[in-house]
View 1 (cartoon, rainbow, N blue to C red):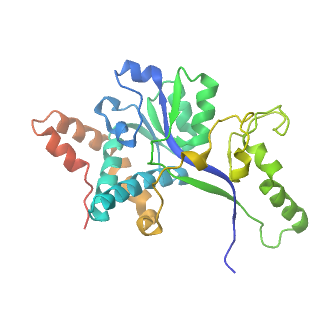
View 2 (view 1 turned 135 degrees about the vertical axis):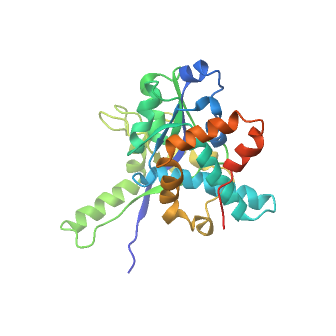
View 3 (view 1 turned 90 degrees about the horizontal axis):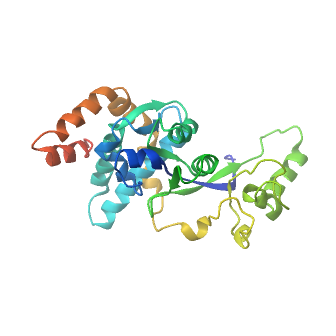
Length: 279
């Protein structure tokens, strides 16, 4: 039988940003993925290597899938949407200061002011924002342009303590276990010491969010953009495509875009850079 997993919590992807850096760069706080390609962000975007970080790879895939879905809505081929999504990634990458090995380091780079903005998992962005103060750092999920997906739990085949493991999974999926994910530490039904800041997967856990660390209900905030297995066919090679076209050539990519933006044909050439070659 194929492996079976149970969704235990929900997570999504968004943009963490430093409000002080945005003011320094004379930029509004970002609200869409496309905002990260703004030329003023050059060397100020923190990014993770999608060949080393699964979450970074999924975040990049979200941008591509959204572009494909938008193209389909307009009656265009999803192929051109793929080209635009990958092109947007190339323009964003041209602003990157570097590509780190772990997506978990991105919020710290942003909160310290070493970077102005970057893509991150929701609980990384929210927890870092709270720790340094929301007046300094923010986190936002682009409206109708992110995904909310389950993080799984499973029982290993041949587990030594089978019955105990089953009981643990049942507890995690119970309402009591689900409330532990997002209830503030130290409160009734919450963790003793540290808030976990994860989103429960059970809808009934959101009936009363009074003591939740993050006042977010993904069942209400989810937009109409849905993932599609058909649009994910390039996911296995997505990281390598980004590595070859953006990471390995980062200095050249950055210099090329700066030359484009200084050109009398800037709009035309930047649009070409923002459309990935597709055969």
